[in-house]
Length: 152
Image (cartoon, rainbow, N blue to C red):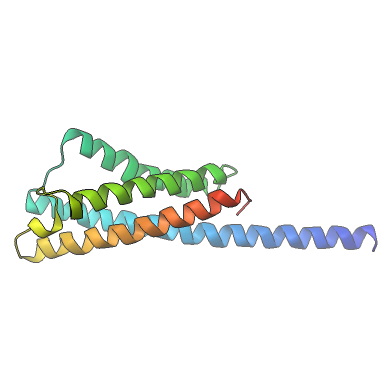
């Protein structure tokens, strides 16, 4: 096998790796954007139902649940993608735990079952479930690719 053949094989392998990296980053970015859209509707339901978070809850939502996944998705398109996978895994896991506890475990005005019947209560419940789904998907995908310690 000559040098030209080896060079050609290496170039094709690197091009294939870049395709996989972009493909995976597209999926992760899609999950993050879906999560953001669901969060916007969920926040609207919070406002319409008069469910306000305290200062600590508000800071957590803005920083961990909204900002960190967006930053993570951005990092997936840079040379810092391993940090992006870690940030995606951890922020989405934190968001999942926060949502699970506040919407389904704690007895509080934020609990899904505490809402009076109505369109905004239905939107609140549906988005609470969709948030868990997108957060589970994001944290699992982030953890998987973070643990691989590869270029994906």
